[in-house]
Length: 160
Image (cartoon, rainbow, N blue to C red; front, side, top):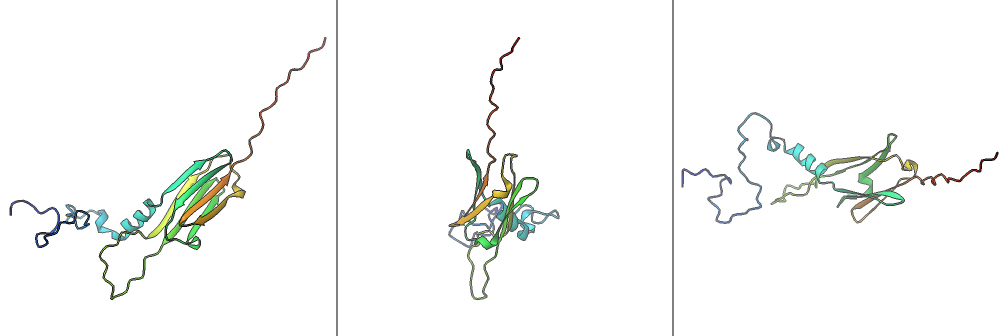
């Protein structure tokens, strides 16, 4: 038994195996190059960025974006439109204040800044963009320009 490396940390003292524990063996921890575990603050910010899920739906009249932002207030979220038709949704999840008497067993909710950018098509009315937030879901509606009617073709009689 002693010849087999313990890949899952020092768990021999515990009789309970937790398959969801984040206490895993890191084969790169003793090497000099940076790894995700050597910058926990960066990996936490990246997880907030990656976890911001956005759906983009096109209807006959508008482009509709829906972003899941649980626990955020509308004051903590920014929706911006740049001149070159770029929609940006950004904000920040703040870390919960830690008190000395509290004992944390697991921290899984992400915190930090997030930002998502989308290039809008040419057929949008950028000045009429509307945004609303309800139950942690941000909805951004970007109306489309009215389509021009197809040119009507009519025959012209040739005289002579």
